[in-house]
Picture (spheres, rainbow, N blue to C red):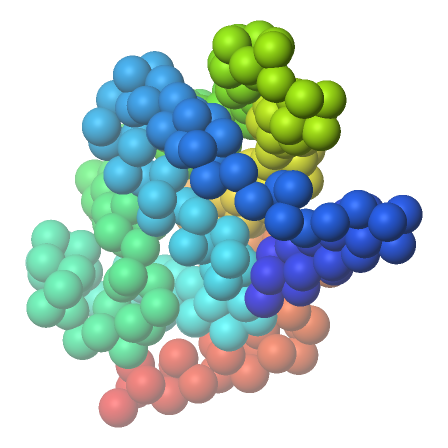
Length: 289
């Protein structure tokens, strides 16, 4: 919603200011300039990026528009899931815990946390390192280094659409110049026409420069920045899981390990310790049931 509101304000102010100066919107109605710039931008975007990144960029655009960042409930669900798993590790036989992490989609524990189950990468991350804890001969600092490496890879993969859109944004002003040059070429072909016609053709050509710069700095660039914020906050869930599991491996009780995970959450998004304790209490009741 924030992106839509921002674009409405930006477009309204730019076009409103233009009209207030005495400009006519009909002059900006140059559909073929848009075709040249838009088509070239999309074409070069496809050329420059693997199809997986192109598809993920489309998905990322929707995430940016929806501001699909983890909410308080998502962090609480993650901490509740981790608390139940750690309680299982502490009180149940190895075979019972393995059943949950080998088939999380069939696990009674994971099914209680649908928001976490939607993120398959995060679910696999939790299951893989819980399995290492069960094995019992992995050293905490080695596991932590491995977690950091995997989180770095995940972050790189999730930010690829951001880099792709940023590159597209950087290229749009040049593509606007391409459209403008083509418009000038067209105008030069009508050099023998009256000044009012020739002026209109040159004005239409300059629309290409305007469109390219506007799309770059007022549309694509800001959306790429928004997507970066969204994806970085999504990756923060992995850090929460990492801190919690490593704390448990270092000997902390499940409840104390949750506090390590809670502290890995940004201060603006961090749930209160009371909310985390209530979630842990609820997860404990579910486990007892």
